[in-house]
Image (spheres, rainbow, N blue to C red):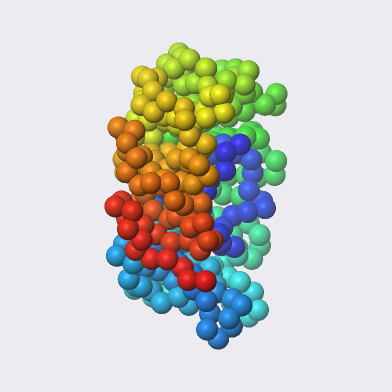
Length: 348
C-alpha cells in the first residue's frame, strides 16, 4: 500500500490502530490542505536536547513562536498541536494567532477538512469527530476514523471498514478489509482474495475485483496494477492507458509519474511521455512543479520537462501555496519558494 507522506511527524497523528487502506500519494492536493503557515522546529533553549515547534509564513518570518511539543501544518485556519498535560502528551487545536481554541484533551487528532470536521481519539481509545468549536459531532465510538472526503469518511469497527456520512450515518457497512477514500464518486476496495475493484456511494460494485492494486480516480483516471504492471482505467472500467509500466502514480494536474526499466519519467493523460524515464525517483506534480531525483539528489521540473530547480536536496516535497519543504544533504530541513530561494532553514 502507498503511505501518505507527512511534513512533520507528530504523535497527534493516527498511527498503530490505523487500518490498511489505499491512500493517494499527494496528501496536500487530495485533502485540499493549502497552508499559509508552515511548521518548524527549533532547539529548546531551556532543554538543549529537545525541540519546540512553531510556525512560519511563506516569507520565512516566524508567526507563532515555537512552544509546542509537536504540530502539523495549518488546514482551514486550524492546526492540531501537542503539549504536555499532567505528564501526558495531549492534542489540541490553535488558530492563526496561536490562540488555543480546542483544549489539549485528545490522544490524537487529524486536520480539519472542508467538511468542517476533524477526527480525534479520546481517552477511551475510540475515534469520533469534532467541529471547529470543539463540539463532538459524531461520538467517539470507532476503532479508527479517517478524514471526510467526497462527503464520506471510512471508519473501522472491529476488523471491518465501512463509510459514514457527516451526520454519522453508516451508509456503507463495515465489511471491507482494504479501502481507499472516496474521490470523484468512487472508492477502491479489496475482497478476501486481495483483488481490488471499485464501489460507488451506494456500495454498488461498479468495477469488478480484477486488479492487484487500485488507486483513487483523479481527473477521471485511476492507476491500477495487474500481473506486476501498472496503467490507468476510466470510470467505466475501460483501459485508458495500457498496463505497461512497472509502477505509476495518480494523474495529478494531468500528469503522472511512471517507472519502467528502473527509471522514472512522466506521462500525460493521453499516455504520452512528457519526460522519458531517466530519473532515479519522481514525485507528483503540484502547482506545476514535480520533484525528481538524479545523481542522488532532488530537484524540480515543470510540465514542459524543463529543470526549474537543479538537483541539490536529499529529499523534496510538493509545493503548496508556493512553498515546498526540502531536506538538505547536511541533514537539516527547510523551506524554499518556487524560485529555489531558501525562505527558512533549520540550524543544527
